[in-house]
Length: 312
Image 1 (cartoon, rainbow, N blue to C red):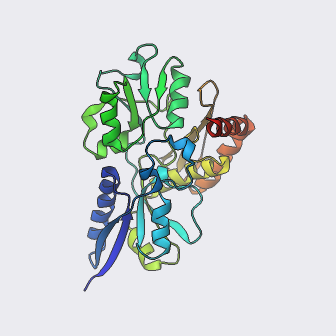
Image 2 (cartoon, rainbow, N blue to C red; image 1 turned 45 degrees about the horizontal axis):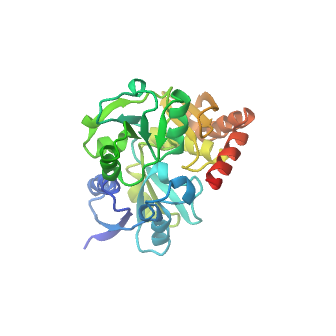
């Protein structure tokens, strides 16, 4: 009888798509095992009437899965890498980072608008402070509206609340088969993605060598090194997923190009820098880029952001 491995996941349509993507790959690569899926609701799935930045973001979409792992109720968990905090609970580790899908942010508009075509004062919906800050840096005239919920809910609210546009991650929209709804992929020089955006991660117990060997087979080295650099930058800046920080690592041969930014909530201040170095030094590149941003005043901007989000 095959040994059963239990995969933990959130139960949104996108989370289930990502989990099935992992499960199908692992089944092909590990025919001696049987894989089953356990659905777990996280705090971020339950609280839908409060802006993410106000809840606090440490493990908002991961904590309940991590508790289930540590209790032995599941063998590993599948996450969007952008939801995974840069410091994991003791005893847990990232076992694999899947090949990255398109990390761009995209404009969805039932009115057919691209970013530059939006009328003055247009209402643009997003739940992300990172997107808000970069949008306002590019177009200070826009009115940014908060929108929560899974992809289906947000797409429904776009029309129900008559927003002019909605900003989402390309990867999620494309995974759900809705690529035809994308009006525009926002260039990276206007909007850098969230750390880890577009990639799926597997988190597991550090001491479980059997599971570690099983999941390591889907690890994609280039994506791993790019995202390790981004996560090292974020960790050094002490930013969470609800802080206006953007980053993008891209492997070019044996070199890794890393871009990063920190912005004020209103987009009036935006600090950007980039560097290139050996792929093997991914994490130290991330720390170095963070140090360069801090030297430019990133800590002052981030402190102001934290105060503003706490006071609101």
